[in-house]
Length: 222
Length: 390
Image 1: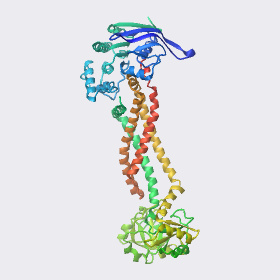
Image 2: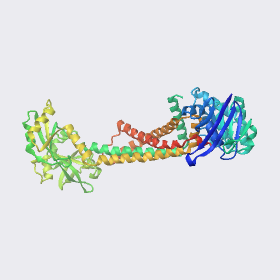
Image 3: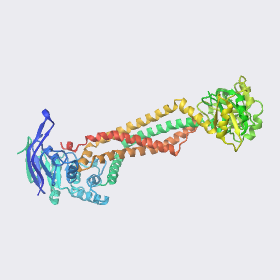
Image 4: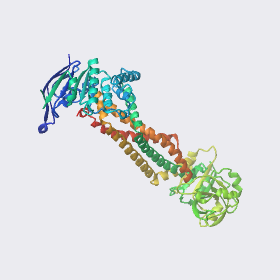
């Protein structure tokens, strides 16, 4: 069964003379538990594709089925439903400076009714331990290194056990070692839980973690 | 996610963010505190004015009062002929009628010899027109030539009169005439008169020799205890003619207060001051909230990407604004209470700090902060999670 199934997707910014086609006739299928790296030069449309798959940008033509839901011409409620089952990792960590590592991770769990405060904290601590931050549970982002912050945001993306994780240049603000360490952790946790991962990156140093590499150029999959 | 949980979580996040940045929290709290104190002081000045404006009529004792129709306020009465008051004796309910003379006069400070203006009341001491503690003990002496009683609630510029009387220095000058102060009473100052003196009607005319005893300023009508005051008022109106008003005690107090509320532009001045305080406070809170949202746009966009709704983000901002309202208001009440006491002691006008006042100012401050939040919320529109992927 495929988690992501894209057929004949076209996408353009602007209208009329300013119209700029960024994705042309994209066909893409990603299976459960697969780790896919999407690479390509700047402006090739890979980030646009990622935001469409995450329910953050609305596509109007073709077919984009994520988690069994059609996202083309979808209602906001469908997009929100997909977002809640998706984990996001950004180039910047985007952690709340006022919150500790545990509290930041709990933000992803407060969306879901099923947990008590105690369970949320326990789960957050558990996953922070799994990303190697068991001794930094109550540190604030300002007290953490860049790699540690990115690991907190990986924990935040994974804590609610999403079916899909979308990552955009997750290593861009990290040095080689901590970058590779972060994606290693991401891959190991994903493999354990059967999570599907799509990473957009320029960083050739992390290509080795992928099951499959897709290259996008000028809006076309090569 | 249920609505209540959503609000509780948003409020908790707002609180954690507020207390994290202490200098910003302090600045915002001071902004609200400033607005709060300004509003309290403006309302305090306004109310103290209205309250003190009626401090004289509040002490007057009669069931019905006659005053000239052209009299706008008691501090500058238009006098009318004594015979008009005497007509009230034709009413079967009437027990007694007594005229009151009042006029602004010059009182010499016994220490500095500086003359200052105060209000002088003159009436027959056999009647107790103005409520004075232990009046009986002064009645006989008040009837002697060139005696008077001094209001201890007068402004201090008139000198430490009470102490001076106690030490035996009790001769001063009123309108240049030597007068012996035989005691004190308490009435209170108004914006029109810095002090008060009571004397007999005979002494009043010695101090104001140019005034005719036939021209009176205020007529007091005492009715039989069982009399119907409204009926007597109606009957008296028919007797006294077109020249004067007939007011009950409550109407007289209200009449005096209404003068300050309406004839003088004071309500507007204090209302304007209140509004300015609130606007300044709102701008400060808005600035803080707006900057805060701006600094957290990536974080908020991440929340939206995770599946949080815009209303969750709005609740964070609203919760922050309500926290700021409360945090600024609490020290604001304490500080204002202290300032009220200082004001009361330095301008000798009562500053009442009641529960109603506290509640209404809190309401103003809350509205101010929520409005600031509403303005700041527009900034949230720039939280598009799609922009977070660059």
